[in-house]
Length: 145
Image 1 (cartoon, rainbow, N blue to C red):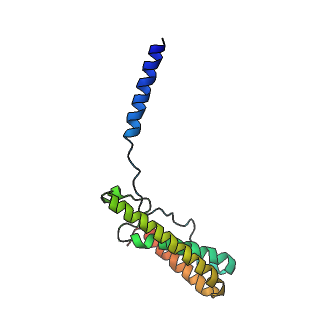
Image 2 (cartoon, helix red, strand yellow; image 1 turned 30 degrees about the horizontal axis):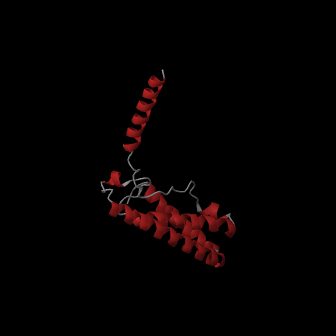
Image 3 (tube, rainbow, N blue to C red; image 1 turned 180 degrees about the vertical axis):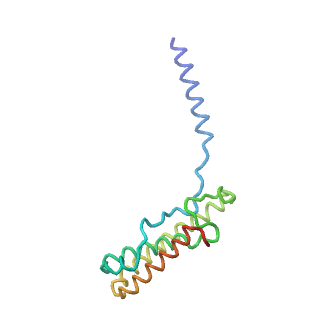
């Protein structure tokens, strides 16, 4: 009886090892940024305080900085190398990994700058910039580029 259990266990472990060995690395995602959940109009934004506008402004800047480098490749989020026909080579993967690190550092430093400077900005300028950024994001989401 022990022999049967041992045989079944061995087959299970052997089969599991084959499945694990066949796993493929997950595809590299080119753009992994979600869009904004709500677009605003001028009247809405004019009814907000500068303290409410600044986070909206920074969120839109961050999204755009994450998308802009890839517009020539694809404006859609969640696209992988395979989706675009780009070979998933070590060189391409390393280049994307390096770019992600560099972009992340840039966005962090830009946010620190915005935290220091935006409180001194004119509220009307912040509102106009938010409206402009949202129009760009609408264009990107409708793939009109």
